[in-house]
Image (cartoon, rainbow, N blue to C red; front, side, top):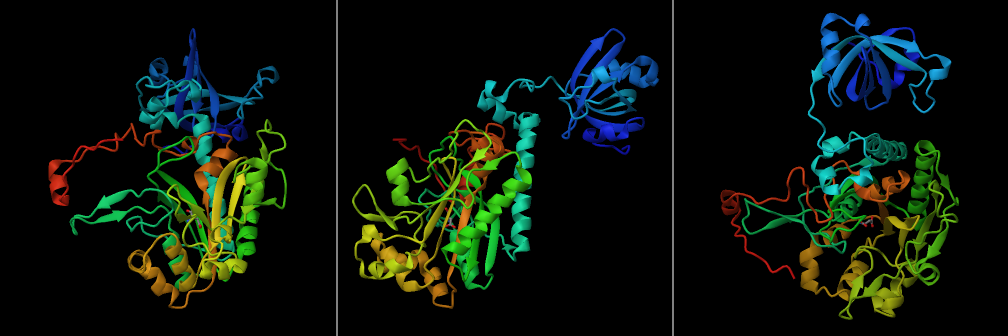
Length: 470
Ligand code: ASP
């Protein structure tokens, strides 16, 4: 293929002949002359098609091309006369005069209108034709912002000695308070892997291994009732560090968020630096929420009000009146509450070394310093109702690891989808995911979940039975 330049770069080639390729965005015929807006992911450019300037074959093609056809176009970049300059377009100082057109692929009329606001199209159709829906400028911009966010995180953490380590997706249940998605095993009939609700146990075990500074852009799976800002699979920035206290994890993450915003979202304003810190008790009392929205001007779409929420209770009461963990069972109590934990004193008053980070009323992350010794971890499990045997069965590998020289450690995880959605001023995390699921957990494009063949079921030793969905 001919050497191609990005459409955004066309103004820099004013006076020269260049090749561009992309999609026909719009075509307007004016008698003998046609105007095409040609689009690639970088920008759109106006192209004038005049038969006299075109080679023979292109003269015919000029009549045939339609919106969304993929074409390569060779032509001259010409400065527009002053009064025709379009300041709203990045290529508005020029237009192209076409010399030749090559059709790379034809296209049927788009099955969903791409020139309509996405909010006007029902989401089922948007997801069924997601490959088209993503062609929108705003959707490509969301994917780019997500890419840049992840790239920034990787560079920031790499520069500070963190290693990205991948942990398994086929694993065993690790509790984060949701249901597991499970995968049946063919080789061990009747047994199941669980998809991770988070890499929590693995990242802690990497601290036992001496990795010291770990992170991962990790997919997590939680079988919850999908809400506006929840998805069955989502992405976390997951991070763990050894030889640290709460302050170390919080200041590193605060710095990373500040630099991320300043580097890639310069139009945004962070309301308060350092981020304010509020205790859970104060947040609940003052704002009735553990993810308070502290924005001074809620109409300012560029305002970012980060805040840390700290001093969470370690345990909370279940509906049945028993104790459960408030975040995850691995969090350590704040050091001054260790004795109370060990003695089971004032259980409801014990505060955990847990910190959440809220942004404009959403929880965008949370983490804790962990129990790195076996006794307090076993005590937490005992309080939430594990017997010695059931604790051993579920977490025996963690006990063994913690008895084998595990350093003090702690970490955090960010909900990356939610963070990017807020930074892109989208109110739904699906807008910043390439291929999300519907509210009831389906993918209308791939048509999943779907039934599997009787042969597959037999191989797995599974018989499907109707269930009462109440
Ligand atoms: N595993 C926790 C979560 O997914 C985060 C953490 O404590 O690091 O919310």
